[in-house]
Length: 325
Ligand code: AVI
Image (cartoon, rainbow, N blue to C red; front, side, top):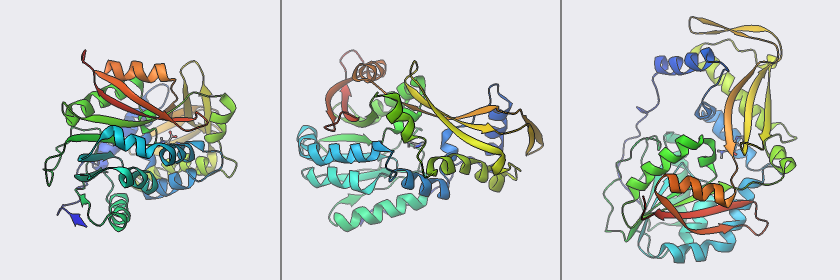
């Protein structure tokens, strides 16, 4: 393995008073809302891995099936000597399926703010690809990236953004993120992005309301995190999780709902929750192929290729700069 020396920097994580401000602002707004990145502390990341294994959560299985079927063709489209920059720590199997088929990849650059998932991801990948240069970046991928100098000149830089995480951004933010990525990949580069597809309500809602209750635990863990990190006194049993599909907007909307009227301490603020009051914590957008092409176009990108699994549940889309961009 050739891992470039690096320092894990947690400086992008807001310091606690900044975290408190983010949370207080969200709880003062009407309706109340908190950002979904708050899910991913250590416990939340572990719970998300468990969600991916639930029978109802079709996304991960569909994406893996898609890659198992099409990775060779995807690699052909991307061509040789690719520098693969991965947004997020990555599911080892997905990245592996792709890298196995890439011809003479120049480097793999995992971009992940949390140091532990980054370390684990690197370890897993190094076992499979001992010759592959790994250049980790411990930063927040929503901010402008300064990519490390590659060990040799790549033919193209491909930003790999798997898992439909793009769907957790509202449309305007998703377009902004894609536009930022457009700048980072360079003229000859591309973006390989996972996007979950629209389908019947029952299938989508089941994926976010698994029977074992793992998604509920994942959602409510956000409150545990706020209790621990900010000294809040959320009573976990007094809140529940609610995920519903808004077909008009094409997205799952996840809320934390107060079971009764109650007050919660958040720093110096006492926040009143009414009975049944719902606090928005996540959107998970679902796309038609036309929706996604339109989103890409607003970021100056054109869809070059789309791959789907055989059941048409999930898509991987390859975007390059559009002439209009
Ligand atoms: C990370 N992201 C793509 C997941 C999703 O499906 O929106 C997060 C998640 N939330 C609840 N279940 C899974």
